[in-house]
Image (cartoon, rainbow, N blue to C red):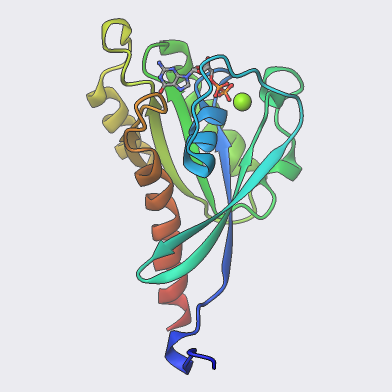
Length: 184
Ligand code: GDP
Ligand code: MG
């Protein structure tokens, strides 16, 4: 016997989300923690682009996010335009304990705007906030940059699993809101 009624039917959305930011800021670890709930202290980056599909619940609806990871590509050749194609959301990640990764955010934003074919919902992510003693970028600096550029802002620790799913949920939730406004 089937229990599905009309209104119970799950809407099937698939959103492409890209992870960007300098090498070693924790992009792969954030994704691994979010998608697989694992932490690899000595994770090594592989070369090439990888993605993970993750089911999420937004407003009681099931939404599927396809989250792309640069997988070390950013270290060598740079990220190609194919990586950005079709992306509707982005996590711009820096490491709060390395200022140079924060200084790169403007460049990453430019690249995102150049290569993407639509307005991409963006969240600025200050990762590794567990490294309290070696912090080089303050929370206020992150907030101020986010305010100037428009994206959302959050500090995370992939190590402690703090705010990891909130970061992804914020982007996907906003995309969902924008799309459902357009539909109605
Ligand atoms: P990616 O190059 O941006 O993908 O960075 P990785 O995910 O490979 O992470 C680089 C290094 O930072 C690895 O040794 C991770 O274990 C470490 N790392 C990632 N996230 C955190 C975090 O939140 N806190 C701490 N302390 N280390 C982290
Ligand atoms: Mg990586």
